[in-house]
Image (cartoon, rainbow, N blue to C red; front, side, top):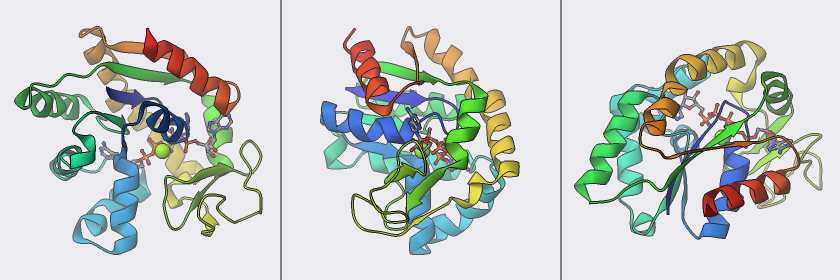
Length: 215
Ligand code: AP5
Ligand code: MG
């Protein structure tokens, strides 16, 4: 299956992607996680992305599309993938269509996670992620690690993302509404969009997502 996850910052894309990718046996590809890995490794790509991310703006398409394409072309993605945070504007969606068409592939679904803004703000405020791997995601209240400040998955140190400050979250939400939401209409025209509520417990949302994808 080839799936795109879409939803505002803090909707739970990364959280759900971890479970959905496991259930569907496809790799979870998050451009945000790829950028953060590049930043912690101090690569040129990471250095270029960091300023945009810290401000809550999109990293330029030239950088992002190439990175996403490279990742999708790796062997583990040959039979499918779950994209989280890509595409994030119509130009990226068009570029993805070109990549897929070149290999005679298609998307199966675009899963749209709907969450009210006040809930998103609470989820982001309490989020903690792992130094070793930013796909290990927790919440101080809603999804607390067994030991405070320590990652359940790998024992790494948990910290708060630099772009989770109140001011940057405001920019990220605005960027989502103006630049990312239009891709939902783009994919609606291809009859690919499945919208679900992302409210409720993590496992309830996963069950809802799996049921929606099976249809
Ligand atoms: P990215 O890392 O993709 O961030 P985002 O889209 O803003 O989304 P988040 O990771 O903040 O939220 P999420 O939906 O994954 O929620 P999570 O599961 O963590 O991108 C960061 C930056 O990178 C961008 O701003 C941009 O600069 C750059 N970038 C990335 N991709 C790009 C692209 N394609 N083009 C250009 N630039 C790009 O959950 C949030 C919290 O809620 C957690 O604490 C979690 O534990 C909790 N939670 C989850 N589910 C539930 C639930 N059901 N109930 C209660 N709490 C829950
Ligand atoms: Mg995420």
